[in-house]
Length: 436
Image (cartoon, rainbow, N blue to C red; front, side, top):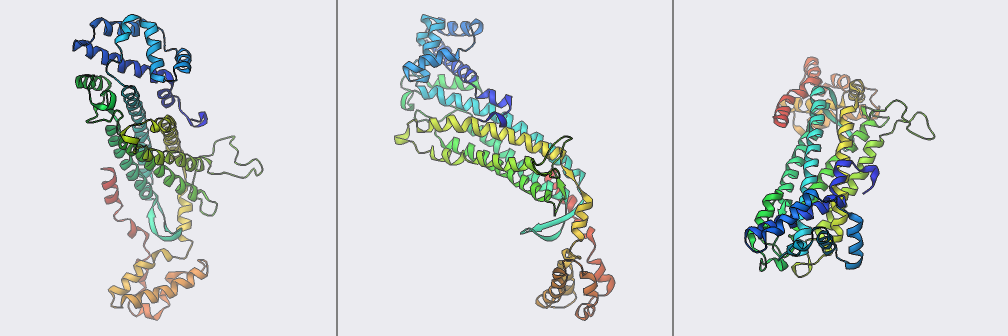
């Protein structure tokens, strides 16, 4: 985790204090259910909860000092708690194994993190929707392969981004459901030394579902899917960021990141206004996606269970969620403050002498009785003249002077094919589909 790209609310989830708090709750809830079942004395559970209600804060350095000797983090924690609670603590961890604590804790942390990420997605969606509605009918050029294609609206471009992030949110909700899984099944997952009712109790108390069958560890296909979803969302952030970066290019300049008073763009060139936020987001997206492959490789554990996944998840759990949380906040800010230039969009639309209307003329000629092949040839030969003149010539004027065209279409019919509003007649339908 890099502090520069971290926000306190998400970072707190991965702090040792929160981890040990969850560990305690898992152990205490398990002990309580064991007491209800008559396996351990009721006094054992009471002693744990009484200490927790009045005891000191988690002493991370003290636990770390014990682990330096035991070389086992869960044993170190249990030893420290026993030192605080006294003799009744010996009933903790009855029939459990370390993975019961570690995996269930990770599930809690990931669900806590996901709740924040879902809220982040809601804020981003709201920001994109606001700007999309603001520019619902703002004409701009649609590009394919980076080349002018046909007119669209800027609102439609943003509606596409909204739809993509809405899918991302749906996937994140499902990923949360899948990762919110509790396993308290003991060594090799057989429940030989602990009643399945304990697992159900702990799961209920922590807001989790039970793992139907564990191998001592929760199967890592769940985690692989979770981090894959984070990677897809990061890719969507990059996709939108790359578009902003393109739009801010000097030759395009249809939109740009907000440039605040006193901000500097270059240490050498005072005139520079660089898309630094969206460039940064491209880099952050790469880091979130970097968690996906290790998560996939964690699925295959030796003979069903080992701890090769553990070191990986100590990295990717915090790093991927913290980085995505920061990235979602940043892209939301970019969208909220994005400077949009409709006049420049119109200027770019007009730059190539009406080439963006070529398809409508092609279709009109086919409707007038000319074969598609001949219609294409007629329009293209005029379009290439405009292209080679760098937009100095007008496609409409050249078509009006082409006898093959005028034999089938009058001037008014040609001019009608250059009507910009024609392209936007279904924008309402698109918006209804996206924002219903």
